[in-house]
Every structure is written in structure tokens, then in C-alpha cells.
Length: 259
Ligand SMILES: C[S@@+](CC[C@H](N)C(=O)[O-])C[C@H]1O[C@@H](n2cnc3c(N)ncnc32)[C@H](O)[C@@H]1O
Image (tube, rainbow, N blue to C red):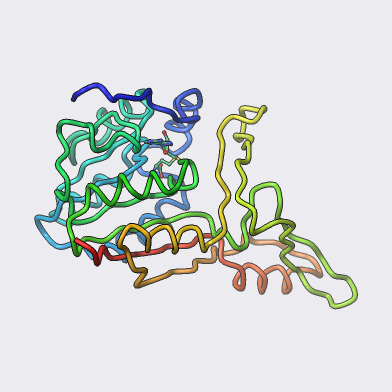
């Protein structure tokens, strides 16, 4: 691979070992039960298609893409995560070390050579969004599609949203303290203590309008709740209802309508 012109940037390199261990070979429970199935549903892969997984991390998506008879390429800015990806899933596809912002400079890549691009829980770790979308658009052919799975930006604003209990109305409610302002948020990583990675909160309009600026039209959304963990007590009914009402994840598919 040709060297990238700018240094790769990812806050995930220092926590790569922890993350690879935490997700294991097949992914976290949420990867297996929720996010990977959602990606596959939105992608609707056909045999022989070329798929680019941007922010591939330890390569969890590769086996599912290979099973669908499509060709998988994962790119990531973290060398340590790519070492894990190649060791665990190298038989299912190829993995390239690159910052998303340097995709057009990677010699293995050609403009318009991919049928589909995926951001599996990675778009909120990348910045600035307009440049990320421009580089993704460069890689996709006209008519190709991009699929993003992210934590739902309307309900999950890191550190600035949460659950509450309204005793008077006997309701479990979702509280959102900030929404329209785009923010970088330092994230504490379970078990590692101090804030380790950086998540970029953006309102939904930044994704939809940013995609449109690069010739993409959104044609499908999935707003995905997760099953509540079993609880007991007088609030259980309200908690269950709220977990079904407020999606944790947003899946978005957009088509490249401009050439
Ligand atoms: C939350 S992890 C998700 C990894 C993987 N998709 C998964 O679901 O296991 C976000 C990933 O995005 C990668 N990433 C962040 N910024 C990047 C950039 N500028 N270019 C390429 N990859 C980047 C990180 O290295 C990390 O592997």
C-alpha cells in the first residue's frame, strides 16, 4: 500500500487490545444480535459485489460479507486493530491500513470501484464529516449505496442524554440535554477508567444534508430499540415500554444518484 499523505488519526489505537478482546472473534452481543443483522438487511448484498467497510476495526463484518458471496475490503486507521482483523478474518477479505481521509491516495483503491460502503458503528468516531463523506463517495460507483449504523443521534447524545423516572406520571422518560450542537465528546471506556476515545455527536440533519451534498439520497432508515434487560420492581412496566419506544441505534442507507 502506498503511504498515506497525512498520518492516520484514530483514538482507538491506544485501546485496540482492550476492544479486540471485548468484542472477541464474532462481536459483542449487540453486534451479533442487532448491528450486523441490520447492516446486512440494509446492504441486501448480491454475489460478486465489492464492499468497503470503513473503520473496520477487528473486521467483524468480513465473514458475513464473504458468506453472502461478496468481496470484502476493510480499512482502518488503527494498525493494532488491523493486525487482529487479518489474524481473525483474513480469509474472508483484505484489510488496508488507511485513514478514511486518505482513501483516494491508497494505491489499491480506484475511484468508483465499490458497490457498497459500510460504517459499522464507526462514522461517529470520524471527523470532519464532510471530508469523510467526500472520500467515501470517491470510492463508490454511481448507483452504489452506503450503509451507516450509529447510536441514534436524536436520543443518544453521549454524556448529554439519559433516563429519568417521573413519579407523578409513573413514566420512564428519555431526557436529551443538548441536540443541535455538534460536539466532540471524550468517552470513558469500560474497564479502562479515564476517557479514552472521542465520539462526535452531530444532529441527524448533518448526515442527511452531508450525504445529499455528495450526491446521495437516503432511501431507508431503521430505528432500532434493544430488548430491555430483565428487571423487577414497580417501575418495570414503564422501563420496558420506554426501551421499546426509544431506539438505541439508527441504521441509514443512501444511494449515490450522482455519477
Ligand atoms: C467504534 S470502532 C468500530 C469498529 C468496527 N466497525 C466494529 O464495529 O467493531 C470505530 C473504528 O473506526 C476507526 N476509525 C476512527 N477514525 C478513523 C479514520 N479517520 N480513518 C479510518 N478509521 C478510523 C477506529 O480505528 C475504530 O476501529
